Length: 421
Image (tube, rainbow, N blue to C red; front, side, top):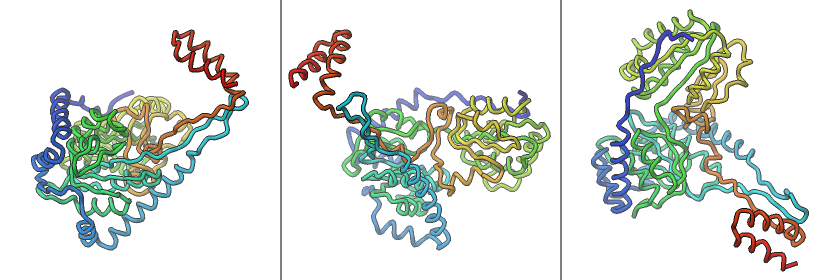
């Protein structure tokens, strides 16, 4: 393995200080409710609104700002996401009628959570696509109460109109103009205006991620999201211009984003480096994209596709592209948030409209979890029923095991049932 371009080390984050600040925010929200939430909204976003829930009139006003093409695009993307989520839901079936002992029935039910909070970040851009990615799978899962939160546009008391329309098209029941760690705390513990939810999903900045971490247990969460990532495995059949465009598409998210090309071709790797520089000269978001690429971008030369696959599994990237003639390495790729196969399959398609979800694990979390999907909002809960004969067969086994562990009450609970025979 040889680096044609190597990333800098991530800066040591002020994790302890950030954790303390977030803990204080959560504590204040729990103690003071809406008054603290409104104070933080004002301090961090300039959002002074007292009534946090967005009204139907505000939503209708947001629609009025959209062009017909923008509305059609949102609805088409929403339909693609909805159809894929429903197809995934159909794979998750109930189990009934299984039996280990004659006269017993075991199984499981697939049950939607009662409520969820979908956090849509504001940041530098109106990420209306994230509203679709979070709310639609929750709806497809059958969640009864779907709440959406997003920060107001800086210095105003309004969510960006495109995000607001996307939330409505996706099917949110309640929409609140609140952002940051304070919104996560409000969703987790509830305030006078916002009733607490069961699960919180969605990306955000480091304070949002830390708030989700600290609130986990009080509520479920999807995962801890970090800076965006893409890794592309490519051979000399790949177009360096397309690879460069894909690297910059991730790099423009923020200065901490990471783009990585792993290739078996030195010529391709060098061509990608040149293409990145050429495209940066005409890119509207070049300031952020350049800072990200120059600091964290990588081009890695490998001796084989097998070595490239090993590197990819070790990185466990959020997005993984594979642009090679020989796709026999595909089964070896096991750590990724979402996989994009072939040069025609742009990672940006998954960001917006292909139907898969773009809320994906980062910073190596793909080793142990996938991204947000319809199953994020479902519980698989087991059940059992024993007839007398089955009870008579298993109770002695359970009694012996309970005595073996020294748990006499457990044993008695099994033994007393034998008297029912």
